[in-house]
Amino acid sequence: MTEENLRSLIRQIVTECADTNADPNAIPIGISNHHIHLSQADFDQLFPGQQMEKFKQLKQPGEFASKQTCDIIGPKGTIKHVRVLGPCRSHSQVEIANSETFTLGVPAPIRLSGHLDGTPSVKLRTKDGEVTVQGVIVAKRHIHMSLEDAKRFGVKLGDTMMVEINSDGRHTIYDDVIARPRKDFTLEMHLDTDEASAANVKPTTVAHIIPRVQSTF
Image (cartoon, rainbow, N blue to C red; front, side, top):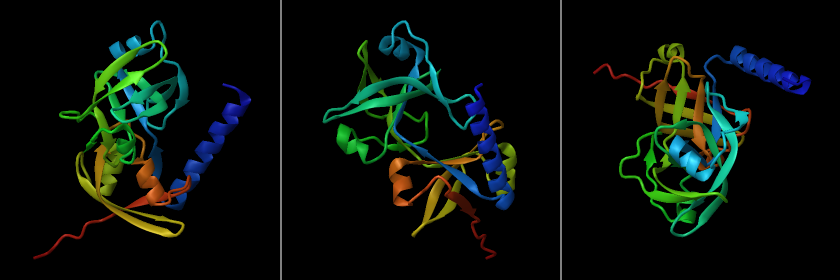
């Protein structure tokens, strides 16, 4: 690790610790740009003879953005140079924003990752290969959290939460955010670029869960 990278890591840790101490219920927001998950077979077809190379570590353990990119080709248009995320999965999947469904001309449904039944297909192309992938979705907004976080927030896997985001000039409430706790997850709310733009999310913007009122009648 270079000295510059070490200093960057220390700054990140200090910032995250400061944010947590200031507001332990604050949930960091990760803006999810369009991206691609590939099976090993599809990766080999698109990038023959290559290994997936890490470009940037992502916040969730073991996940990273790779150096490899490819074009997404739909019936009406193309999105070029879309980042491939690693590691490889059992089934390829393409995640786009809702506004990009018009660019590609595909009726991508809003789904949680991995829920691919009945989803449309697109072509993925590099200079070395091409594959057709059935599995285009607009990712449903969700919060990654540890099991301890889930206990603290009073939610379990698959629960629907109400979440508010206060940003400069915007107060946004989302009433259908899915809880995704797992032992090794790091606390982070995922929004796509459309949702983040609508809520005016900035790098320092955080979210808060709104407790649901239980009726006594």
